[in-house]
Image (cartoon, rainbow over all chains, first blue to last red; front, side, top):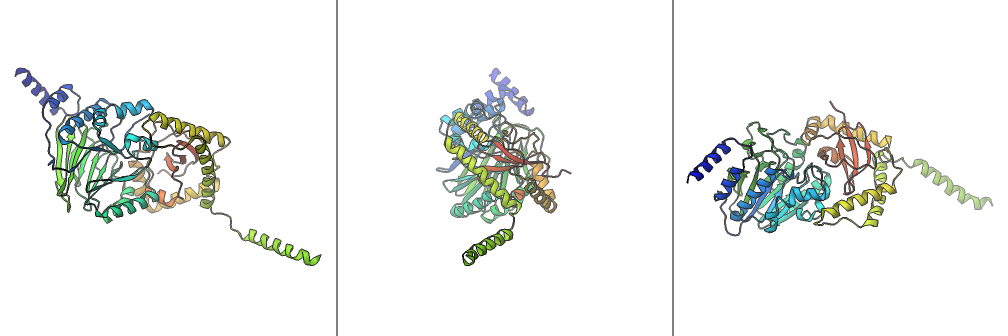
Length: 296
Length: 182
């Protein structure tokens, strides 16, 4: 009992001091049952998201451990990668230390990863089978009533714009359309939004009723107040982190810049629910987006 | 004899006139021809090796990339800066970029800034530096430039515009001082 109290005190102290690694946190959290905010509706589509993860750092591995811990409750089937999947060199050893080893438990459990390319990625990663890009810089796939579009925001040329317009048009009969790519169209962190990219692709998103846009690049988590009827999320802190990088603004609905995180999503006909979890297993944001208008 | 020569003279004169009337290719048309010539080399090097297909082996991806780069280097070992971006073509790219910057200066510069600008020395037939991020290309510029085959891309390295072989990670040519810095 005494030991348990000490452990909880340490946990509280460590949580108060956000951002510093303490193995006690992970130990204590992994003993407790993870808090699940998703509705876990029967036969819903469930997936996770990570961004800016591939740096082989201890926090990357810790986030991966939390993902596996939560997966045992949520049973998500796949993970969207928001780019910067492999930082620095891309030797075979790097593929191992920056992807295969940290996510081994998930890969062994049959979880599939669907990558998009960031500015730190080599486009040849599209040939790496576990990233499920099938040799393409941009691609689409469907799960249940949701259509997913992985884009290459580092190189938005006219061929990709035409492809996006055509493929979103084909997906008009799906209830949910989710686009994911590396560079955010809205952000309150260091890099700021890519305005030129926004001017090119947001009108296409609007034309076809895209519901959710997920990006990385900024090493923080941020949920944006819905823009043009679209729910925008930035999550680029699943390995990298830029402490206190967010500057509060009127478009920021929720921000988190003191530790790493990953996200879990559940799609069903009534809504699209999300839960963002920190490296230490805390829920830092959650909510539901209705089919008509984003709300949280 | 005179009647036999007449058709020859007429054909010769018509051909000469046609040749004189044929406009010289625009810089971008010339660029596209040079890109097509490069693609013949790329395809020849690739057919010697077999294409890169999805694989679970990063070793295979690495090996194919390196072999393709080596194959291309061998086939264009005398290539120098300006072979693809001739001075006229390079000036045309500079002109187009300047016009676009004038029209959408804030948007494009902001896009470059948010895409994390990179600095490095580049050389023809050299690899794009290992581990160096790829500068994100502002979409407005890409939609103004001539379209490229999917095997190639444009990238900015500082103020230099680079033409890159994506799979081989090889620098084909570059335009120095392509974009003005304020």
